[in-house]
Length: 205
Image (cartoon, rainbow, N blue to C red):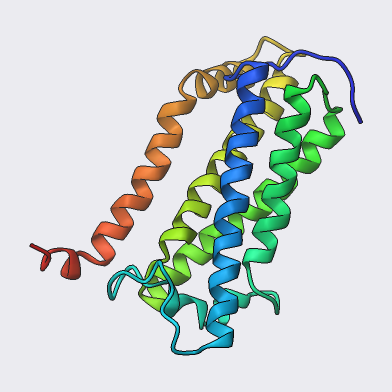
């Protein structure tokens, strides 16, 4: 699995390692808090989670829905496992380990599945449940960033073997403006949240 190689792409080797370690650790911590809150609700249906702030920012409303257990068990279990892998990969990179291409493709497949899942959860929160979970939104942010930089790493590694052509040019442009693309992605979420709950936001002092 391990091999020596440079890390092409928008981030330097050490930066990519720190990014994975930081995002993975944040994801694990957030998922763990969600799991604790879920257990407390199961123990006491009257318990009000720490992230239930107002009618819109209300974890309790979401945790008691079917979407909160999409695969028959609490969703945070997936986060603890998945983000744990990301943090471990980051630590391994910082320790000098390098992964073969098949491993990166597997990581990309996993992060893509996570990306699809959090977008489905976001849709459910916005347009079906009508409430937002602050901790869940942290998970959305982390998952999108992990997917994005994993994708860029895989693409840049592939294009480094064929530096010419339109595909390689497009890849270089995306890599060059990776931060702008990620920012636009996040702003799209902010825009959706603002529009969806504008009636409530507009009543706040």
